[in-house]
Image (cartoon, rainbow, N blue to C red; front, side, top):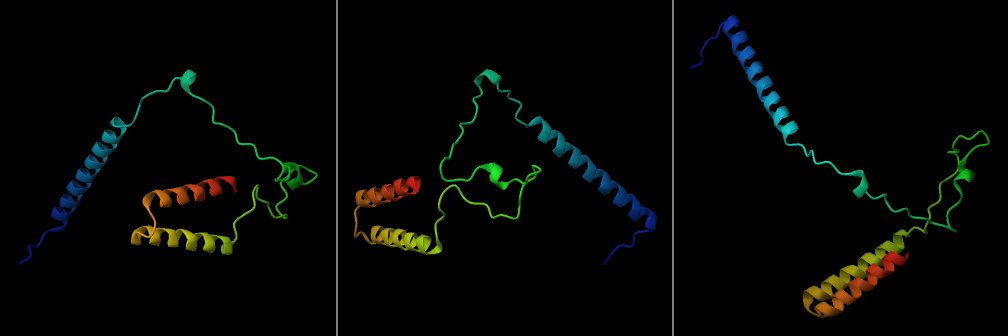
Length: 127
């Protein structure tokens, strides 16, 4: 059985619900502001980020500017390092998958597995 509510009563109920929602939103906002991290970092303890310099492989930035100084977007950008091809990625994925399968089956020891993974990591850092 449903109760029939008059229009005025319905508006009062809606107004109370809206007021409750606004109060809850204000409480959540104030709680969020009070919980924010306010610790300050002294400038003397902050260090500058380390810069990475790539030389010999990338083109100078001036090659990508028009004579009037604006960037030239008609030329393709080149990477600083040679990018891995899809075939190389597939070969590496297959090698790592077979290595993981051998480890799971117990065909290679944990130390041999870790040794090979470390070799792959060193290879990834040099390329």
